[in-house]
Image (cartoon, rainbow, N blue to C red; front, side, top):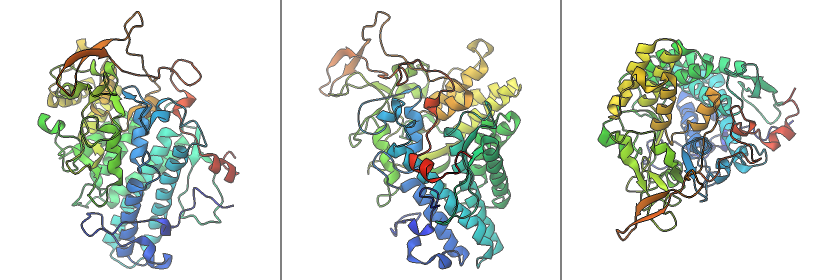
Length: 495
């Protein structure tokens, strides 16, 4: 059979050739397949092109590469009150990702499996290429880490938590290069997928042990350790998660308060362990800022507003609290801006994939769930100190709950909302911004003319599942559907 969504020839990659771009490569469709894998220099082009494909593939304006995964996850969580503007409104209502015929469902599936096939080609062909052993190890390490990243995403969004049922079936595993004649694989268990992810990441850690990168979009051992930390956290391997997180964040200092308000748009930020660089010539992924940026004049949709109750999680002395502002612009009056993300002056912005703050939180959660309370508190309070937030004490409440709330506060807009809900087997929590008697809560806004006035505050407009039932844990509405075309064309999917 022919696998429309699994088969990927590397020739399908389209790579821009701007001379000024840090990721500039020769187009991979400029040479035949046998030439692509002839040398390590050519295979480097495959790696670069695959990274470009993952990030800058244009499906629609609302699907700019991998950032569409992050935006979808946040839209389906607790703390982003998505407006009715173009973008992620159907994901926000839980009508889209359960629909196997939805375009975004097909797009995200295609994106990950094309990257997986390209990495499979590199892994299986690099040893026979011309070039040094050191170059081959570097390329194979990059490919294995990137393959693991894709399968970790598939495991995180296409089935319930590993800790709920590690034997649950999720998506097919492909570890060999595919052709048009490749037969479709059945769905694999979560345990099988996580086994592959761990093997790939541990191999990558060895292969990249001595690699010193010059740009943060490249995968080095810090990135690999961060991916291991995420993987162990999903699996409930608490000690291993904390240890990997400690390794990942080494050398990446928490940013200053001033830097926190500069827009989360620059890969040079001291906290960023991994990110995607954007330039004026190559900037597809930057389009995501049109949803996240609710304060720059050049932003277009202003759709990712904050739930007003999210603001209540912050202490007024917290540097993050200063980013909240009630919107007084016509058509947006009463929505709560959270001004974490801002375009650069030229309307582009680098994309954050991994920060040391996340690693501090993984370490804290790993220590807490593993019974090392003192270490957990120390890790949590290190982050809170950097954010000028009140420190945790035994009177603050349940430690794990506090850590999970801190994840929501710190990682807002970075793609962890839904995956954390699935991972922890918790429920989406939303409520309308209303008084006890059902009337709108009034808030004070400043109009463009400087007038202060009271308006109805705007929060969540969707507070139930599409069937009218209340949000609950482990709901089928949280799990991304396998595309209908894949179901029809892969008869082995459910074998």
